[in-house]
Image (tube, rainbow, N blue to C red; front, side, top):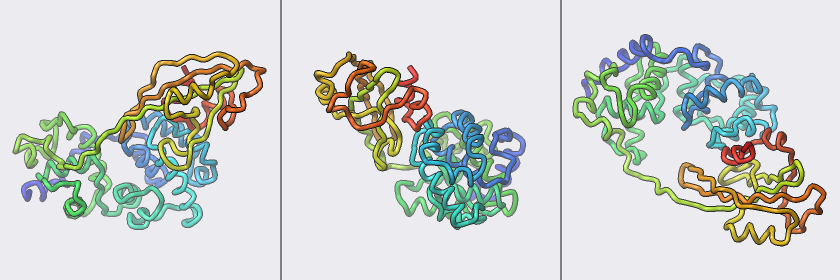
Length: 343
């Protein structure tokens, strides 16, 4: 482990300046709002996807005050398709906290940033390093992979104690200066070179001192034995139209897709058919929609039912609101529901 430690930071800094990413829209700024927004969007989301959403989000909410003042529905609508919607809700809550508690200015230390809604230790450190030059260590998924491989850290990261030990090592590796370049370099290495399945070790500036490279087993790092057991769910959706309008319901404040607008959901196809039995108009079952979430795979069975434009609503019609298609697509919709309506 000691072979990698003395020169790791210097090698990362030198590599980042020569080969790292420099043209991303959230780089080259010390605006904490823009850096924070990018860090939140990049959590569990590919850069290519964020590149589509980031400029649209900034155009609608150019600063933290604009975001704090916006209705949550507007924020969710612009977030629609990015997934992990708790990030959008925390983003809104955090913006309101920055305005209410800090006069619209982000705190300048990682410790203070980490007290805000939705900002964890690693995100706080990234903002503090990029915007305020603080020597603070980050430890997101990509950086964990780079450091555990380089150091040969074989502690099980399912253990809180081993995670704390890696944090301590990461803090000890921080350079005395250029912490922003070093931090970006670690991120870039994890995203472009030290990949999970096929690392490009010949291109890595740490290869000569990397324990995992020397062992010939980079894929065994990081070690994390705790495995999530994926589940499977099946639900029916009622896609109810009346003339040019579609019925949507707002989902509860907790649970999957919380706060988003969606089609009425039923536990089974039989339950959905029972609701529409005897209704005017006509219906048909559409092909199933398969959707993967973090912990389970979800089969959605859409029942399309077209009520006549002038028909009286059935007494058993689910509670919700009627929207034109354009109005519906302007709301915060889960990605599979948006694709369904657009098709």
